[in-house]
Length: 597
Image: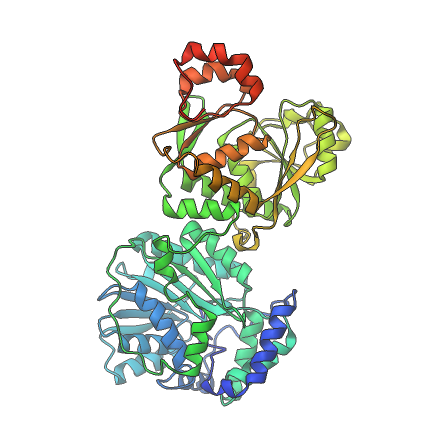
């Protein structure tokens, strides 16, 4: 099952659709106003192999036929990813009309298509023979969920054009993506996935074939409607693609008429020579212009993204994505170990945050949920906050040096539904009613914990393993205006007060402060020693990240004096009480203050 056997470019667009402007308007308005979506209905047939069906799909894909402009659009994008004399693998290829189109316009290319339907494959190979293309392109009966071993080692790009929605289950969808990822690991191939988006309104399902393919055979129009109902939402497919390709993947959903989506992974080597140009026919056609308007950047996006050409959103997950995309192997900071300090990269921070976000979604955390972090300063603290933000949550920093009653008060007032702690024993002095108020508790360590907590406590590493097959929450759902954290005051003048800070505020302050320290960079060290529940230290860490200054974490702020002599930071913050109290002690270790003090 799976593999696109029914893949004959279901739901293709026809130039005659533009006489139905009212239908386009109705679909656009309806799809942009309604929030909920239709429940997914997998297609009724696994493989489309009857002679009538195969003829109908093959006929729709001929040159200058109704699907022709769609192939132009896809060919322009794919051609940018394929070097001269490159090799293309097309999944769920049907009768190979896209490969026919691409190979004709790019006479230097070679290609191989996989499809479950033997009749589709036979018709496609006959078409190649008649057009004199058999020496360069061919089709093979194969399943897109198990094709990796058959992909040639010279594969440059894997294409899935309107085939992902044919897979009946999320497990098979992920199996196909896993196979694509295996090919990429082995060959460095880029990826280009184009598909439908499941609509919000039942009327869209009826309008879609009437508007886009009014002159097509009834079987084609019926399959168009079935394909639309079987399509994945952008969030579903985006999360699945990200879970296999991480920071390398990007996604775009069509605007105005949000019924199409593209997901791409750029070539491993962004400096490779781009594919040679080709002549496009029908480039001024109505449908081609519509697609260019719906996807204003999608043709160039795979290459632009690999070169850092796409802007990052003003959110903390977006900041993490941008940093990792530009310098995945650059040192982010140091993690404390029993042997000393271990350098960690941006990619490691990203991977850990992504896995935690997937785990939190698996636990049932929803966007807007408040999550407490009760841990000493550590690499894990920053990884936890990025993971919570990625999943749409709001971080409530809890000072590990505060008394349990004060912590319980903050937890209650902030309405925390989850908690991340260092070890289960950290809660042994808490009031049982407060402990029972959490939906879940994650421990960084695998240490034993009290029986009263056992049903709700899970080790962080166990969660990652349990949720490995789950979907990563779509990062795009986090907006700059969304609250990122609730910060509580110290309580020196009364009961601590909670203040909300948005993602946009954190990002603006991060950039502004970084501009005041232009002389710092990768050769500098920052000591993160004030509790990260403290806004000051959290902002300072973000500034250090912006400047590519490596963070060294100090678990106990009372060890600051000895840490200064060991770490010898070049960038340090302090509160007035520390500066007044410890200035003389500080001078014993340094002839003068650090340059960034």
